Image (cartoon, rainbow, N blue to C red; front, side):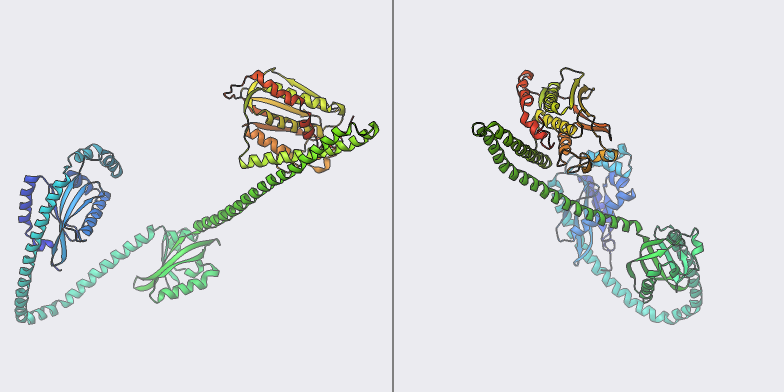
Length: 630
């Protein structure tokens, strides 16, 4: 329809009518045409007129809300309710003339309930409003009941129907007037035709001259605008005619390593294309020259210094200074490609890590199953050896018993070695799987360490190795797992015995700090090479197999010690000089647990450590020839 709403309605009379309606109801209204232009308005709130529709950003949100309301109105509803993006309610009734949408009659702005002050304060902060003034206008927003709004919109619907009818009558009247005007114009045209033709002929030259001047000025202004726009663009822009650069911005010259972009003018664009991509660039130029726009294409530039730059480029035909040139726009994507390559590498590493985790899981399950499978026949073998020893006493002579005992000791020692390996593997797999739990109790750790040390001292004294225990405190209560402490100490003492020559010395000392109870196990053995100290706690690793003489090992004992210390939130430190001995320092954090068991009663459990020679036998079982002495 060629007419607008304002052509079909007497806006002055309508304004007076709505002004009277507003004075009676205090309900604000607005009349908008199909383009969203406000033709009439009464009672608009200061929050909109002084803030929302004044600020550029919030005004844009108002425009979006107006468009949304008009789109909703076109869906055929008698009227619509809508909450604008600035937090206010609006209602609208479409005005339809001959099935053409001409505009809408709005009710707004209002609220159905008390304003959300937190939301509007956030609005003030977002758009930089004076918060006090803005919140004052928010407090003035009228609050209507839904019933009142719906009743008003019913009235507005009838009013919209009336406006549609009035507009239809006015439309028909205008069409009749237009027909009369056209008929009259035809008569007048016949009278003035020759006069008009003469006037056109006389003025044609002047019009052409004036038009040329206007076009010239516009071209000059347009060219200057283009030049400024091109210069400030962050992407590289270059205009070339048959390969010769006629315009380039600073971003392009910087990309190819030329300080002043004016120095790029006159050069051949293909000299800045990577040699391997020049055939692609020529193909792209031919594509653009037939009038098509080049889609984004990855190419490589080459800088003055020979550096290769990955870009993403597009191009199109472009009129410049009377020529039809090619406008090319490129963006540096070197960092993006690096990131993409890095992401691919990360994905590959993640895949490898997941495979390693799955392999580690399978390995852990394998060792757990293997350890269980070993323990069953070992228990049977060990039980058989014990029964055989018991039954041997009354069946053979003393000389025969000595001969058989020699081989029974070998059986028992190797059985102990296998049991030690199974126990260590089981404990490590439990820790790895998260099923190993400490039984933390408050104990006198000085007594525990002394009892373990003395049991070993009595055990190794026949090997002419001296074991010394010393402490700076006679009693110190701390929360630990006594069985784990026993495993740790026996493992470290076993290592000390392995690598200490006959006549050597092992010293165990207990001391305290503000935060920890410290236990030192120091020997005069062969020590650890400096470059091997960092690896001694690695699983299945041994310092140097060539330095073993009368002992064997699986390489998991110290790894288990480290894991048990970690479960205690403790630390283990190693000091060693090759050829002079080693010192292991255990540090248990000072802490206590709520425990109803009396400390004195725990002394009974310490007797198990003191008298459990079998435990020592198992831990010392990988020292060949040790148990045969004496």
